[in-house]
Image (cartoon, rainbow, N blue to C red; front, side, top):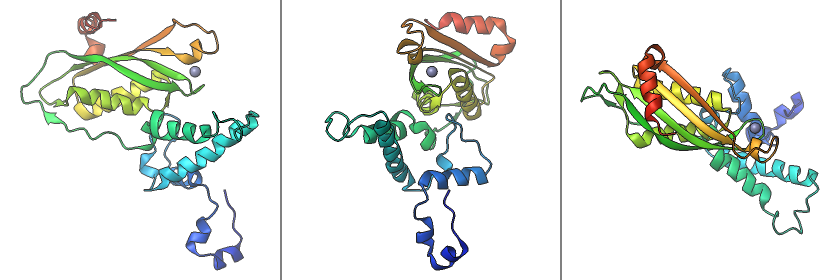
Length: 242
Ligand SMILES: [Zn+2]
């Protein structure tokens, strides 16, 4: 954080005062003032002002260049890594972790006019994320089971994929990711029951660590009637083609 003396404050105009304060510090201060969490899998879009994501991109580029320098990579004469810092910064902020920095997709909910009350299953939806421990890819599939009631809002099938993409587009922990997705779908649609199963390969176990190419992690969240009714749970699990 930048400290200013009293005399600096009186002579400096408002834009001068801002100079030198990294945009990440300004965003962080807003989040802390609002007492919000900013873990790797939290969305912070509400604290980023227009134009600041571009400034954040410049800031991360400089820091990534520092990482490459510290790894003793000659990015000046190596034509392959000359632009790597910028590419990685862009990949993190605009692509793979974009779900932290942008607002959620606009989902139109419709009333359940047909009074649908049968088990509905969506999937497999391909999901791409990265683990917050190593920033290594986590790639897999999810299945979503919804048990609607007459008050449940209906959303289009493709919307489930868009909600999943937004949640997974952050450095994640699989167990937390499925809970975040369940909370979001629960809030948007208010069903009687909600079930999510996620099966994913964690590249931190394939590329490094135990170097096991075949291991997958499977986990699930069951809410409402899926929790209370073992038959419904069994029906859902038997219908998802794994
Ligand atoms: Zn990992």
